[in-house]
Image 1 (cartoon, rainbow, N blue to C red):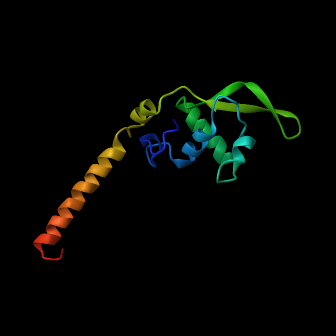
Image 2: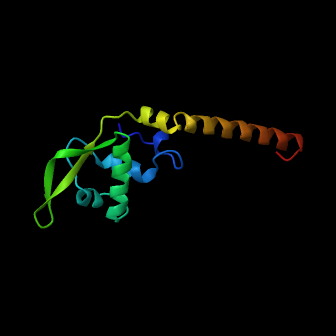
Image 3: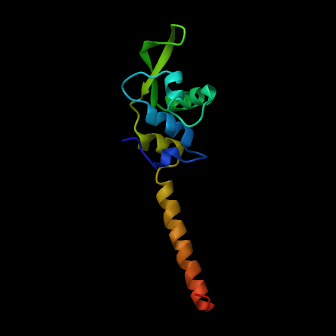
Length: 123
């Protein structure tokens, strides 16, 4: 499971959508930055490296011991998906359950707004 819509991918205190895009590219087979670059919607290798470092700092990505040949035959670092759980990382970053709370708050505010409009005769 990639965690589509998971709290850990929120902007701000979460890791953000760029990290989610990179995380979804990782698996058991090592992938280099160049390989990942071909499959993400933005072309900058530095953005990919930054996202990999952020994921790695939380155990969501890891450097593979197997090195890959890329380009001119130079060995390059391959990355694999880490073993950390999304819920644990979200809890550490303080965003676990935040999306559900925001949705509940929004629904409550909309309910109050519609009640106000009914009282004012505008709905």
